[in-house]
Length: 375
Figure 1 (cartoon, rainbow, N blue to C red):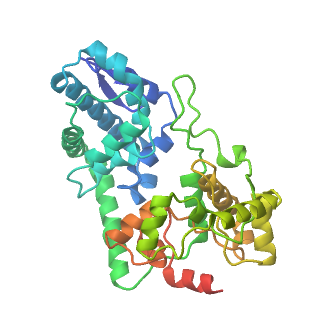
Figure 2 (figure 1 turned 135 degrees about the vertical axis):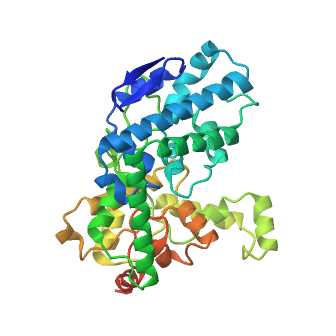
């Protein structure tokens, strides 16, 4: 009935259609996958746990998830085993390696987890997998059944329960310290490590990895090419690019001061195009060196490299010796969707509190951070 999956110390079900997906995963370096999978539910326990405990839990969980997906396709969508394998084996292999999917599936191991978000799984599949799921496919049902299977895995593994109970104890101690007024440290070394863990690997999830898996092999600083920019201080380009109907609505709501003057727009464009083209890193270094401006706003079309530029700058700081960066500006890289979610849920009131206790890569004491910002 079963055969060993030695990479993770579990046994594969022989009737598993997606068996090759797990076998392929077992050939890869699993240390980073384990960290990504458990990062939102097991933090302190990952380093102290025996690797085989978490790897085995990972293997069993992924196998159950794939089996649940198979059953949904077979019994609810009336697909044959061949149709499931031919149509979905490659997409599901990429899906379980997606950076958003790994911690989402790992969340089921959290002590208080009752469900994971089926809508999130559905959104990620729709955005990153070309093969659409049948209309009868129920992501919510898959998520609900998967959490049940994870609870069974936890119940049957005393060693895993020990890791999870250790994590719970760490969480209780942490919250006790917060209540007692003991705040997070201002640990720049930990912040450097957090930046590298989150952003060092080039995100290539949209590429075909069926022939060669580039992920976690290419670093941002190895491939980054600095963009060229033009300086623009006389006007806000985005105002003049707003469609007329949107301009009218903004004026009616007093969010736009006056109607756009087309002649002025042409004049401004000419002034802009007369500006010299410069490498963006030269502009940034000049600002940091001479303190010529307090603010720098970088504008560009989607995909022009704004995000990776910020990651590159933050990684440069994170990879420098700690003695060299103590007196340098600290790059506070903020993912706005995470900040917005935390603020809307009441987890933080402002950016300082977000770094103090929000869902960030490394928390920084807000009082010390405020003093650094004032300086």
